Length: 229
Length: 188
Figure 1 (tube, helix red, strand yellow):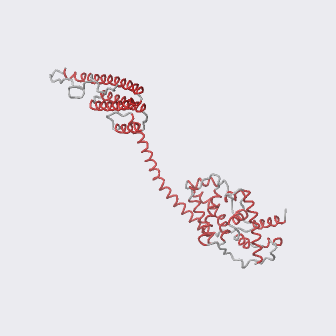
Figure 2 (tube, chains in turn green, cyan):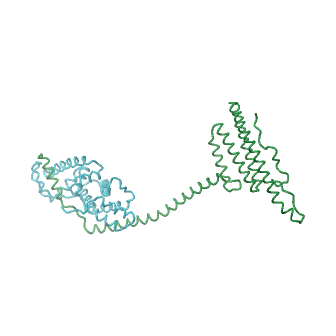
Figure 3 (spheres, one colour):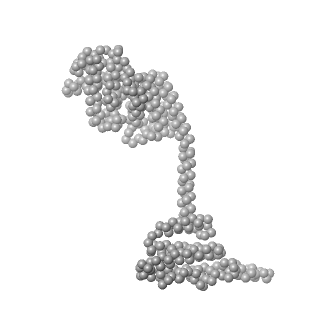
């Protein structure tokens, strides 16, 4: 051990022997009272904040669940549902995010199928007004599909022709489905009227047409646009 | 040397959990464990009992009311509380200026300026404290924590955020500086 290290070691030993400063008892008691008061105040403040924070978190969670639930429910909603307008918003959003001719055609045909399903459901529930509304929306989708095809035919006639075939098949399918739905609805109305005509009071009313005006909708004529070939 | 109480250790963790749950006995236990140490540390740094009392209380209040800021991830509660005390000391210096107020008038005169003849056994506690306060901030910290607080080099390393090797080197330099400061005082 060098002399310097020995000296420093002796100095270190001397430092270890220094009596520590000890706080006077009064200082320690005063300190404890102040610390305790501060801790209690801090705990009170925390307990006041926590319920508010919990409430805010619970509200936020409830709002998220509500929106998610509404979106989920609206995806399968029908025209007579309160969530149906939200379904339209979601479809518009989806349409805005659909790029490419083929995807756009698929999108319009998909929506046309959805409108068809809605119309069938509305016919089944005897909501002819809403069924007609769904069918008009179906027409709109098919018209949009026809416009997409028309644009594509100018750039690529072969692809355009294939698309025309897809649209024609969709129209044929929809026409058949519409006819079927209307027949079913008319049949259901006739069945519902039978007891009234056979009750013997002679006041039986004639079978109502699906749209309520007694003239029918002319289901034999296709309401859909014919794709230009 | 009189002991300052149980050394800081991992034992703090259960107490800290209880304090977080609002257990007043745990607050008391931590206060009892650390108040004297922090008072001693701050007094050694400042040299004034009144300031040491205020800063020790302030350090204990800050540490025990802001436990939500303490994350037990690698840094022990003991290191955290010493850091708070250190910051409080630095704030105090900023507000009041760094002055040494411990009087050396009654200290025994030292006989020689030759380091080899420095009679460390004859040095008073006040001489030593006053000379330490002439050192740099880090040198003061390492000497106070190592020799007055009886902490290990590893504990000091954790408090200062340095390696154990760096603390050992700092300690060696601090002792050398202290020796020179004591010689200077002897000459004056």
